[in-house]
Length: 160
Image 1 (spheres, rainbow, N blue to C red):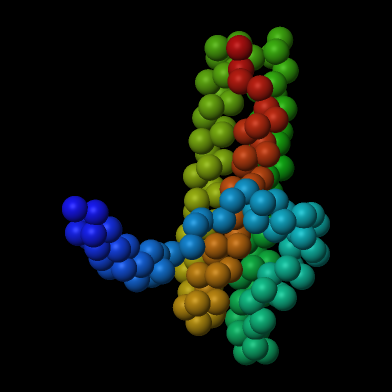
Image 2 (cartoon, helix red, strand yellow):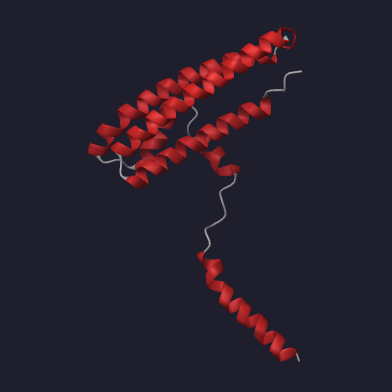
């Protein structure tokens, strides 16, 4: 009675082994995002990170860096706007209902402006780089942005 059960379990294990090997590796954890953030603390550090990671040819670099620089300027302006809006939101005596509505509108407009800037960036990067390099850069940018937003979300208290 034991041998048919053992044989069946071994058969299942052998059949599922190729499926297990074919699966994608587990998604990276927050440590990868933190490592990227630590390597890109300043705009110059971030540019160095992107440059090293993408290994652009001279022709690719000529097309890519103007789009990168334009996006970084827009991102910097948006981040300043975002920081100012959040500073107003965390001052307890300043947040009346009317003021909160204005802040909510401002935060939504900041998100919209950032989305527009990302769409422009994506279109330019896809034209400037081969597919794999383009998506790799967009992933780097998304990871750094997610880390930044997580840091903000975890440090800013909810409005009371």
